Image (cartoon, rainbow, N blue to C red; front, side, top):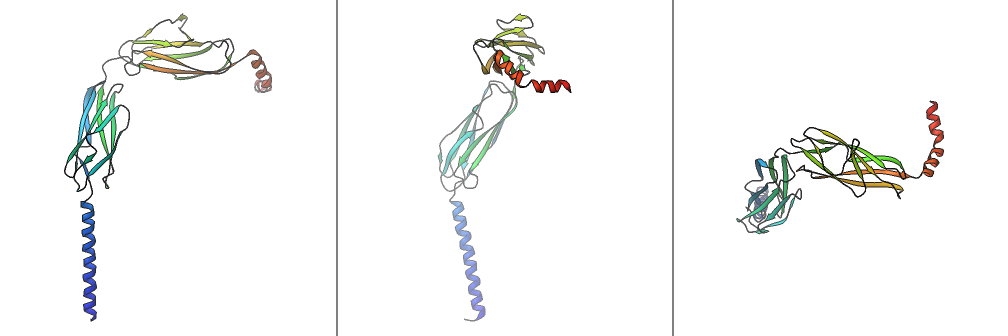
Length: 265
């Protein structure tokens, strides 16, 4: 065999291997499942708050092997998603049914649905639902503080917290306070029921927590209920530390030198 013949055989062998490799690769790709959605985003404009939005995302297995939907999850509990069937033959369709509860939402909202499958190219697809949610005129509750640190309190004396409640809405806000022991007042007037705050107005409220038979750390939640459709109940967290008169004297004696030093500066 001369040099030219040997070279020609080697060239034919290389070409054969390349063709065979490409053929096997093509066969392997052709036998894979592939998921293809008709759309991955669904948008609603100007929907009323509280509406339940529903949509079916249609997909097709465009591969040559069975498509398996492994899992469907959502970005929050307000959105539910169900798959029609989890095994889709080649060329067949399936659907992901999505329902979004807009209650408590307003403005521009985007939620995601995650679809995991055995598609080797895109093992996870993300679907989106978008909505522009309109809320009719209503009251809007806002607190100036949600965590109040009262510091030290003498045993037997009330822990007091002053909060400001604002109405950022367009209608009257009605507010009630719930706690087993606390008392509430607006100015010098005790609060025994609901109070009304007009649109754009702010009301100062004093919260008083009794400390009888208590010592050490105090942590209490006060519930504030209102007719705000988006925030019907909010929590005010009040904390403080209760000391006896004797403990207060000990603290004063222990740190008196620091107080004297500060006064001399």
